[in-house]
Image (cartoon, rainbow, N blue to C red; front, top):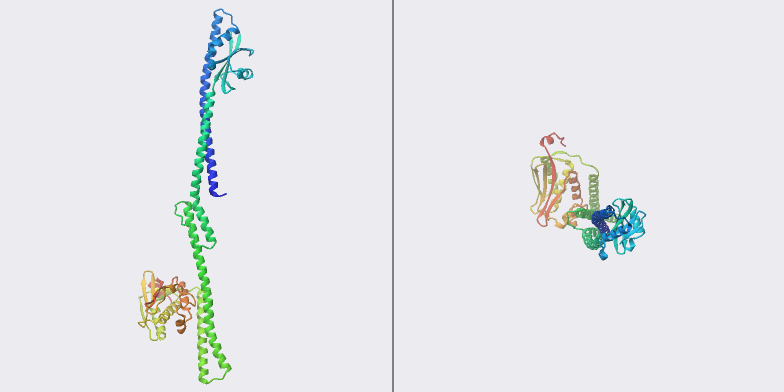
Length: 478
């Protein structure tokens, strides 16, 4: 059974039950009040009738007349004030409960009246005669040693008729209210459960692979909070799936690139070695083949070294110490000037100490400078600047070379990924330099920020934590 149907049924049953109980209590209270009022009125009337009968009979006795049952019957007839169907209902019985006079309806004779004659005080008995209901009261009189029972019957049908009318009205209103409530609760339940249905539909779509599906329910209640949590969960799942797909793609690209990088030099080595083995060749040709074999072997060696560097950076944490930034830049310039050839290195460094592993940071900067040189800067310069900003030291490497397309920037740090493979291989690259730089940056709690525009140039920035000058001066220098 659906939740909306359960909500409708439960709410309707509770509403009907509570309304029925309240209505029944109200009708009963009205009936009890009417009955109490009728009892008081009839008891008073019966008392007056009893006193009248007793006074009249005592009057006969005091006047010297004989007290007889006929006189009781005669006075009972006069007392009843007979006026047709609306006669005052009176019955008189002897002490042995033999009827002297009665104008009770036929249904109220015999056992129906005999029961009330045994009662004392103001007790009454209700009896039905045809369509009418009577309240019967009885009193015992002892008139000059003549025991007499006087009984009165009062029509209280209107009280029961009013009760039945109220019950019918209540049942009609109860049915109308239940029908209206059922419709209102149904519409309300549909409105309240609509977001839940939307959540259910979204979860089914996500389960089938539509990870971009969202509920987007805008409300400030618990369902709205659940919707926002659900959308956050769906976003996290989508991001995770994208990360897994990207990781899978990177792994496939890594394997393909690694296989290609290994295959190319190995093919050259095997080919030149096979030619030297199968056919005699002149000394110059043999030397040329040997040079090819040597250069390709060195390329494999360099590739192996970089892979080992990349693996070692992933396994061993770096020990960070205060390093003098000016001294770091000075050593970098001395190392790179012989390598850059016609490209000059423009370096500007502000004073300061950074928390770093000097060898790794030097390796990062060397890779960035070499990449900047390979980009072919139009002004023949690679610019390296160091700026102290608050608690950080910003190092930026800039060139005015070929630049990198915007769609390639997100992948340039992947192992073996090269924007221009032919140019990179011609310069001796294998696509591992920036992957190593990214690992080094992570070991320093930072990351590489790239800004590039094709034909304009590239700028790479890393921010490293600064330390106080006295900490740097007390640190051991390599």
